[in-house]
Image 1 (cartoon, rainbow, N blue to C red):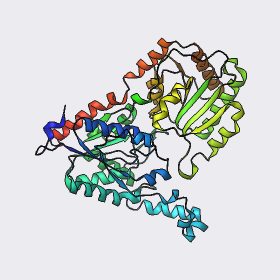
Image 2 (cartoon, rainbow, N blue to C red; image 1 turned 30 degrees about the vertical axis):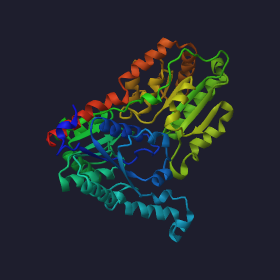
Image 3 (cartoon, one colour; image 1 turned 135 degrees about the vertical axis):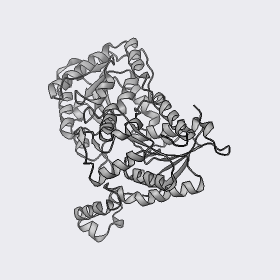
Image 4 (cartoon, rainbow, N blue to C red; image 1 turned 180 degrees about the vertical axis):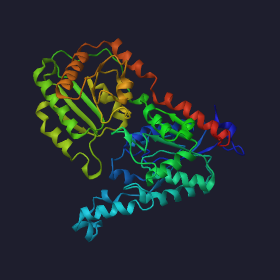
Length: 451
């Protein structure tokens, strides 16, 4: 449905999008945010994005200007100069207290940050975010507000804006605040400060989006009165990130290239198991002689980016073909897949964790090694993928065998098998995931925000 019926005085409806992490921020959430905004524009909305400025993201994960180039030029952006002082690399900006007592300064800082909202680092930005929404609305009144946490302080700004102006809002949780996706349980009690905020935000939201069924179901059980307003809106893969499906196969005797692409968030102990399994497989199996395990993407953020225990371990295993290449601009993602023979899906968590990369990995049509728990959200998505090496556990022996199995697949996979992998991924193309939910938002505006 087109939003034409929601026009006021011939003006297209206005979506105000509070999206911290929107391009050019080099964050995984940026892909989803970009497509939400672009698709809304294509369907007739005027869109204004409120985000942090480039300096803020440069301090954290960095910038990806190739991703920003894919944002519709009609989208207005309001960029706020809110910069994390704990990521400030300039020692001249440090106070005497911070320079001499860094740990005490940081502990004191974290307490201050949570005075206005119970979230470390970001809570202090509540007031600036609220003012930014007010300013945009004063200049061009919004018909719908969408907020995409984390950070979760954005929800407080959206809720306050709704209470003042009556503008309906939608929360794209992506994961979920009150659920611990790693420990698979409640992250905080309902009567805690965070619990009270979570409850009021869900209570007043027109819709809440989640990336998978387990998280949506958790919220439905926690807030049964809101269950009919909770939706699963999965992540997906983008057409520009998928490589070609060709008949080319690794040359006999050539070293296979195994690739990890994404933000490396694997628990360090689990990461060491993966490296050990790789080392043993590469040493013992003739099919893996000369093979490489290449890491692309972000390892840590801010001052710890690329300079931590993970990066050190990778550097220590260069003789075993383990290498780190750093972040990859969005425009070069397809080439990374084109140059790979197999992929390593290394993820933390369990059934509440899906990860956006699993969809992109499947769209490549390449063999995929699962380096995550057996009962995992990504495993549910991979079920039926024809080139999947799934270990029974996360011990060294099981992972070593999965690497070997993937190597066999890489050598023997046919064009038809790779095409079948792409076909398995087709239904998860990002726009297919977003079209129906965005259409529902149009209906909300046309109906005047009625639930």
